Length: 432
Image (cartoon, rainbow, N blue to C red):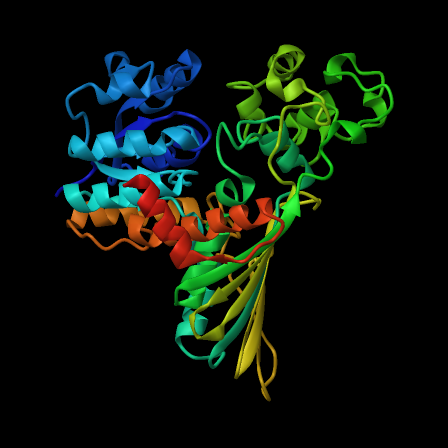
């Protein structure tokens, strides 16, 4: 087909409108937004203002937009986790190809059902596992496949979420409760499970996991702490004070980073005045020790793959910045990578160390180390060419979801070992 591909965005939040929609500005020959849905009028107004979407093509709910005749070639589904499958399945039934924000669903039966729906309708269904599309992980994957490490033996990976990011997203924010969204190991770390599966190049057989919610709990609140920061006598000595965090903190304060994520989640088109007003009444002004959060703030997973390859993964809220690290060992060499620095250090046994710098000429990347735009280039090229095979198609993505959900099952049961084949069979039986 000829470009650009027309797009309807179902969910105009931080991912749909702020991460994916800007691709149109950079590459108008590939993408044209023609419709959108979101319950917040200010988000729809922003969609109209920035991308020229007609008011009568903006809808107040996902159901309202999906009740219309087919409006575009593609639907980007970027609603909350537990509505992903409903919206993606309905879109495929109407003839849309689908770009689906991760995770597919916190319910494994629903993940498997969406895989079948994609097969049944013949539509493209790509999941936004954006890390595969980065230069960093693509270089690692090529290193493994080319045999530079010999036979792969172990993988050690970590995701360091950042204390302020965790407080924003997983304590005060949308992903604080499993019953409303997903467990942290799925919502935040299905990216990492997908990368482990991709680098391993073979199926995961079993997992075991430990972790929990240890810090962001009422018993750890400062003495005399109030329910909201604006009325708290302990705020001066608390690094989580919301006004300090969103206005002046070097990591995420508007004075340092400008009106972008995460402050644009607290208030649309944020200013200091808008932020103060939102913090007085909204969820982001609550004490982090007195919220209704229940997702783990740290978790470690041990994984066994076919052929005896073993892997460990750790996610932690307790880092100063957001970064991922990884180490792979093989029979002929080892490599250590720091995604934050965009470097790989390769030791081929008996040879000099090689340091590989993966930053581009300007040192600039789109979100997730270039993965957001890398994903979109790949997806729209696939649609334009009429192809079917996607790097993160729903079939591949389901495997990472089985791994993550089995890990959470293990964690909740004190670290019992979970056989993944049996775990998936059980979900299929429940779905039937």
